[in-house]
Length: 263
Image (tube, rainbow, N blue to C red; front, side, top):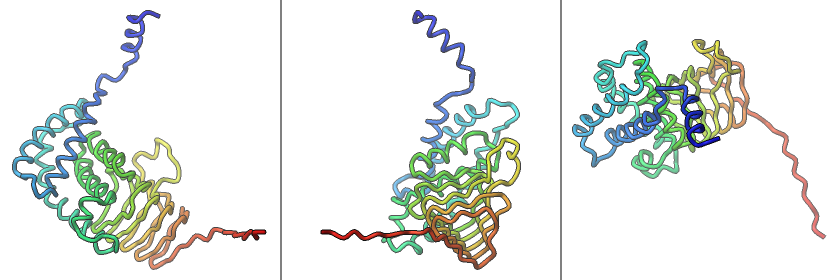
């Protein structure tokens, strides 16, 4: 096959005229600048807000090719949510600093904790998800997923003072509800019992009530599953049904140790 035929073959199979990867790249740049605007002491808020508006307008133009989605005045609506988002994120950072004996300063949390970064980008994306802006919220949380190993769908509903420790491997599905003062560790999955397209508009992920701690590699599945307030879910637990308030759930694998005798 000649080169011109190969080129034509590729062009004929490029079926998505709106699939522009610069939307992904520019969303990541916008997200990082937004993070710096909220937290970096050397970043001028006023200057960055103006440049963020310009970048956001370009993103909206790229994302809103479908006429069923309207992106007009989205920036102003989003801008008005930023002070409240920052208030919640400061509560998250303080919750981490209070809970983790390894945190030597609050600055360490903001600068180095992957769990905090993932929560921050989730909260920034969640407001755009609520507004109904297409694609951009998911690209924002996927940016954090790539950076931290934490996969939080922007549709999840997460309360105040949320703490993800160590972070890597955490999965929080779209219809998950997490109340206040919840602490989870690495490898935790809050997922669906099964995946099917007809579940798109159905609550399929768990609800976690106030003051719950979920330890490493626990898996909690199902939209009807509720973890009652003040409960502790031990590491490696597998749950597909609800747990009453004030419960302790443990998983006890059988471990055998054989000692060899050295001759």
